[in-house]
Structure formats: structure tokens, C-alpha cells
Image (cartoon, rainbow over all chains, first blue to last red; front, side, top):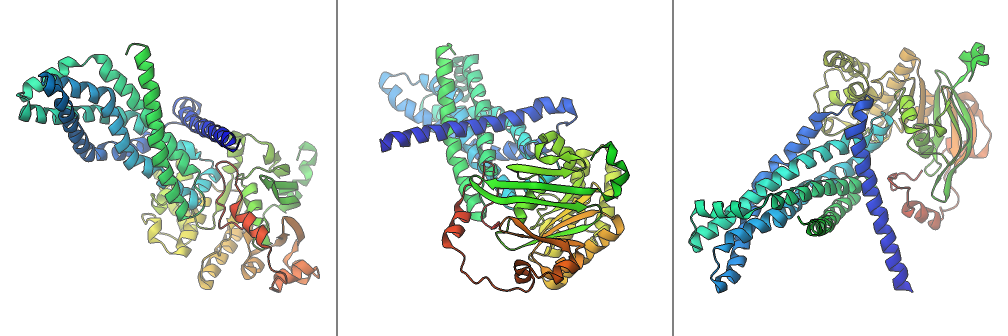
Length: 264
Length: 284
């Protein structure tokens, strides 16, 4: 009976958590889409500076990581394809894996490490120093001021980063293809592009937007729920990263299933 | 609080509490607080750690929701207002927090200007003038481009006051204004409060346990102990009070019994509600 009640407790806690995330995302959406028509305009400047930090500054590390991932994919695919004399399919394999799955997922993980943790730490520290309370006493909604710009930045930047990641991954695969599989750069890239259907790219980008929403919601929620003291900020940041990774994978599964059944 | 009492408007309280009760989960912290704060008076809320004075202050500015009771500000019971209606009240009050709570990512000037930028449609140049004015009023002229991390404790306090003054509030709240400051700097803050009192005739509510500050700045004082109002009166009345709890507090007599471990543990570990309150330092 202990086990059953633990599972039950776990499920209700999990559902409550998802409820909090949805509520936070919903309120941020209110401030994005509804409030501007009620006299509370969007302050785009904060969103832009967040986008710079979340997106532009992630490019170097994202490029390296996804280039290597593309290379690794090509190596692993070639290992099997060589047996069938089908090395030509390496380009196809890498392109489809990157755009449908690994591009969005790896990008999300890099963004979690850089920005998901930063959101939790920033908001968590503000919670501990009563800055969140100060905003509320000044009749400024912490959601509007802190969370909405982050959502906007992530929703715009994650698809952009994912496109970049896909490209870098294909380049990584190309470096293997040219070195070991009798491709030229031109032929490899042409083959990759021809192998892709629009839906491969679009499903990946839809997933990346959903990942962006998830990462922001978890990071900001953990920040807002920080307890008192520096140690708690550390805990919130850790929780934000771990929960983000988990939730991103869950969202990935949901959307992959969805696309599978609707023929995407 | 209605048209019939218009003739008595000058003697009408700025803020009225009626049987205010606040709980964290199952634990009731404030057990039915009732008192008035008159216009243009400075009321000091005194109490020890765990008395509930900080909870009281947080409830008055809308950071906590009462479990029952009424809080009347300008004819409205804020305990029953929606968030939007409460925001209108919040624009008329200012709060200076214990740790200053300045936004670390903005300059002092941007901190002070924030309420003006968010709530008014004033031109940037006008806001610039107003923030310089506020900074000068608190003795921080010329510091608008400094970051909070570059300021000393006393200066941060002043900047926080400037920010609280940005929208020309009718009621100014202070949470432990002397906390963490050396006696000389603390005296400077006391002087600032006195100057604000004289210049703007604001209603000021201060939560503190520093007796010297309290007797300097207060018109009236209210002593809170274990969530109850123990005594309320002018500072002369308090000084002369014969009530045991008042005498114990004012004469700095140590508690005879050791605080019960269970109470202390409970305070530290209790679950504050949802997006909740920092639990640790607020023994109150």
C-alpha cells in the first residue's frame, strides 16, 4: 500500500507541477496577447536583450556541439551502411535525423544549460533579495516584467537556433562524407537537401518552439518558487535544469507521436 | 467612509484594520489585529522576532492575503479587492524593504524611474528630471548612474526610499529601516524619515525593533507580540506604560523561558503558500 500511495502522490504532484507551468505560461501569454490591448503595452526592449543573450550568444557553443553531433551521426550511420554498400545514404540519414530530432533536441539542451539555468538563478536571486516583492508593491507584475520578455525571446530564438543547428549538423556529416565516403561538399549538401521533405524541417521547428516554451516555463517557475537563502537559489537552478531536460523529452515524445499519427 | 462623513474627513483614518487575521497554512500568525492609522501620522509597529510585525506589514501592502478581517485604505477594503483594483492602491503607496531590494541589473536612476516608466506616459526627459529630484530629496544627488552594487548600505537604503517616493505616495511603509546599518548611518536614515515627514506630511508606517529610532520618529506606536496588539498609544503613553509586556520590551528584559524548540523548528520548516514567502530570515 505504501508503494501505491507513493505513486499516487507522485502523480498528483506531477500533475500539480504541470498545472503550475501551464498557469505561468498562460499568464505570460495574457501579458503578450491580451494586456497590450488593455493599456499595458509590450516592452519589446527587454525581450530583445533577452533574445540577444539566449540566441546570439549561444551560437558559438551550439555550432561546435551540433557540428560534432552531425559528425558522430555520420560515423554511426556509416558503420552500418558500409555493410550494405549504401554509403551514399549517409547524407540522407544525417539530414533527416538532425532536422526531425537531434537539431531541436540538442539545441534545447544547450539552451537549457545556458538560459534555463540562468532564468532560474536570476529570478531565484531576485526572490531571495525581495526584488520580486518590490515589483509587486510597485504594482508591476513580475510575470509581465520578468517572464514575458523571456518567453518572447525563446519562442523567436529557438527555431532560429535550431535551423542553425541543423545546418551545422549537416556540415559535420559532410566533413565525414567528404573525408571517408567519396562525397564532394557540393554533392553531400545537395543530397541532404533533396532527402528532406518540408515536413521534416517544419516538425522539427514546431518542436523547437514547444521546447522554448517548456524551458522558459520551468526555469521561471523554479526561480519564482525559490526558498530563502543562497543555497536555495542553487537548488532551484539545479531543479530547473533537470526538470527542463525531462519535460523537453516528454514534450518531444508527445509531438513525435502526434506527427507520427497525423502522417508528418 | 461615505458621503455622510465628509465633514469629518480630516479626522478619518488613513488606514484601518479590523480584526485582521493572517495564517500561513494552518498556523495563524495574526490573531485579530485592530487599530487605525491617522492621516499624516507616523506609526511605528514594534515587536520582537516572531511577533508577526513583518507579516502585518506584508499584509498591509498586499503581499499576503488575510484569512479574515478588514483593511480599509481610502474607503476600500483591500482584503477584498481584485488584483487590478489592488494595483491602483499600490500606485498610491511606497515601500522601502529591509534589504533595499534594489534591482541589481539597473542603475540607481533606472531603479527610481521604473514606476514612472511603467505607470505614466511621461516623456523620458521629464522622468529624468523627476528621478534627479527624488534622489536629491534623499541626499543621493549625482548618483543616478551608479549600480546598486557600488553603493554602501546606507546609500542603498536612501535609493530604495527614493524609489518608494517616485510616484508621490500617500502612505510610505518602512520595513526595518535601520537593519544592518551602523548607528551613525541609521541615525541618518531616521533624519531622512523626519525630513520626509515634515516636507510631505505623508502617512508613514514603520516596522522596527530599534527602540531609539522608534522613539525619534514615531507619533504613535503599537506593540505587537505573538500576533496580538499588546499596546497602542503616543510615545509618551508607551514610555509611561505599566503593562508588563510593554515594560519588558522597552526595558530590554530578556525572556525568562527558553524558546520551545518545537515552535522554532516549526517556524523554519513550515511550507509557505504557493509562490511563497522566504521562510528563513523572517522569524516573524
